[in-house]
Image (cartoon, rainbow, N blue to C red; front, side, top):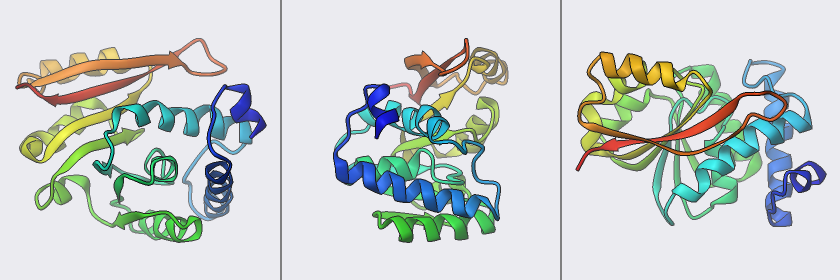
Length: 206
């Protein structure tokens, strides 16, 4: 709570308590599986919470959200905690991580569905208002995965570091951005470094 306050993040007490249960369960699982490198309260807030809360304002009430490659649950589980109105699906293609994610969701008591499948397989059968992505793959690879599925995607919200400009160039050269609109929604300091993170929104051109 003190670190959240330091960063001027205001959340209801019950959500802070739930985030603490999430953090503890995630770190317990991390002793068996490599799910996170952010193993101090400071890093947990400055990376995981801040990244997730940066996405939150760009999700409409009641949206169907797919968290791609959820791993330890950032940003999907954090968003499910602070935005219980969202219909959250967490996709994870690695079986052990999907088991961990399912256990964390149950321990934390959040409304989120964990699916042990690749995101693009899910998109063949279902549509989502938003996809959320952090630390999964370079833009070129992401856009190759999603290229056949844009009719099932409202928008993709992806957190990237300073290399995003180079990644956009790669994707453009591969012809993957021709029919897409890519915008920087916001950028913010990567705490403790001279770098900045960005939140990108990618969606089909209308």
